[in-house]
Length: 469
Image (cartoon, rainbow, N blue to C red; front, side, top):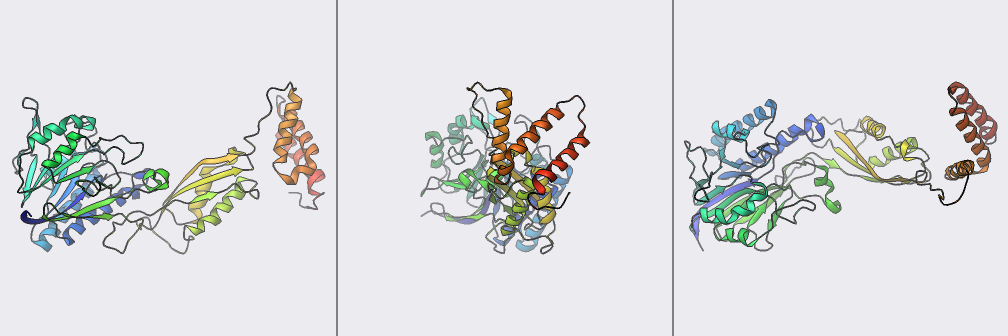
């Protein structure tokens, strides 16, 4: 057992501050709230430092409002930690791919925060002549420090290098000194292959595993999903993002949502650190062990019902079904800054009896937002098919245009059982209307009256309907 000064820290990444998800202004404030929650949590836990493993900002072109909000949060955090703990809690960061829109750019907002002494930015230079990283110890007058020591813990940091990082693992290994008396942390920004489907990552190679001889805790960022590797012998940790950055993180691959959050780490014996993942909640949370996030609802509604003969009927049906997932408007009166005011990710599925051209997503969204307390609605209709749109006429038979028209019209009418008794009359009406519409200057008022008169004579009176409208 190696005795060392106990340390406690929080590891977070991918805060993406300034991200206006779905172009909703309130979402930027959601990201700020999650970040500020972690800052306050670190004071309550009396941690020694905070690790920020890249993608602190969503873009290097962040607007003044975002930068001002972050400046205010961190400044207040430093004052609060001094007041409650009689010391400041250092925030130690590296640059991710979002922090520098162009990898070769020399400036980022993280450097601005460093110059204001709000954070410590680890940005070691790569020495091409010696093929090594200059892990220069941090001091206020060092522009590119690569390491900072806090108690018996050494923290090294390497910024984002894209897929080139594969080539740097041996260099990093050689650049980190042998020091078995300290707990050694390495902060980097890349994803591990296989942890997020359909996203490329870095393979756990021999060269990556070799780092474990000198690194006790590899603090990653980049992928927004939480994971710890390898199983039962974890030393590679990725906490996940602090807020939802994409619908896929809620939907997930195979409908499995991503776990996300932060790591709270306490080390007394370097071989047996106590590592706890604090997850993100879906909405507000009364627990101090969950990070409040914007609530997301993801209902799947089956609309392939014979009773739904138009999209107007379908909208009414959907509005009734959503009550299962949402509170009716007028009973909650939630404001936009209330995290319980949800974003609805609605999936529609099924085979409808009317044309898919009738499916008006914008109108459905309008009606949902009118009826319910929601921040936004996103509707996915890729799983909706139509019986009508799927009608196929045998192309190999030698039929005339008139015969094909009659067959198509007949198949269309047969989709609605109520019209079956009047099939021949309706086919003739459709043929008459087609001929009239092909005239150089169709008289639309006359056609409208023709349809009303036909309906009254052929359908309405036979069904006992006296309403002429």
